[in-house]
Amino acid sequence: MTRLAPLLVLLMLAAGFAPARAAPQILPVFGSDFPPYAYEDNGRAAGSATDRVRGILQAAGLTAVIEIYPWARAYRAARATPDALLYPVARTPEREDEFIWLGELVDYDVRLWRLADRRDIVLTSLADAEGFSFGGLPDDAKTGYLREQGMTVSLQSNEDILLTMLINGRIDLMPADRVSFLARLQRDGLDSRGFVAALALPAVSRPLYLAISRGADPDLVARLAAAFGPTAKPESLKSQ
Image (cartoon, rainbow, N blue to C red; front, side, top):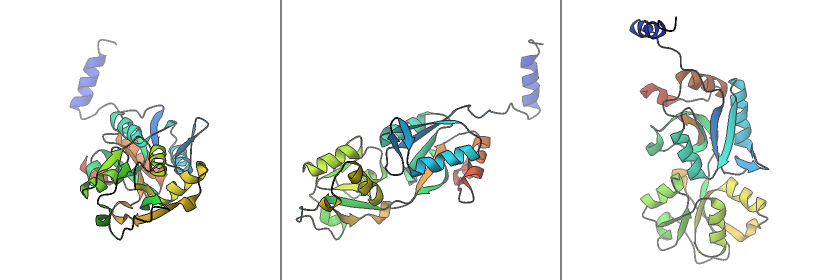
């Protein structure tokens, strides 16, 4: 029987049948540190977006390990890992073909933040920010947008470092989602009155997604999309 196995496989392929690709027993899921939506609490992934992802996985009948990393590490890990989920992630033209976009998870309201006592920073448009220093994350949509607009951005691995730099005057402005920025201040015991949203950035204030790595098993994608519900939008499947 062992000798016949390769012949049977060849016959199946010739007849148009291929062995089904099984979904991984434990699905890898990477979340970026983004309180209150995704963060680590006593070694366990937590947050409102994390809870929703867990609900989707449970509805799809899938077992997963969710790991929370700084944004750039989570992004690179998801790109390098077959059948990996990533959340919450901005859907940009540059990333469109890197992932299959399952659906929207989180609203995103990006502002440029300054210290309240930096009254010399008055912005009516991004052009007014020329000459001020910015901080940002690597491989991040906010950083990419600022650089496209001609701004110089100092890169750091996470927003906690950027916040410290802002407080210490090492950068003048920091881009961050409004809800997440205020949650980070509360978590760190900082008075929100010490910070001002200097300018809204509507160009990057689009919903953040749950995505799965490009080339993922179509059956797995279908299960996740069905579990996500009527708002699931795996459009990238059309171009596979």
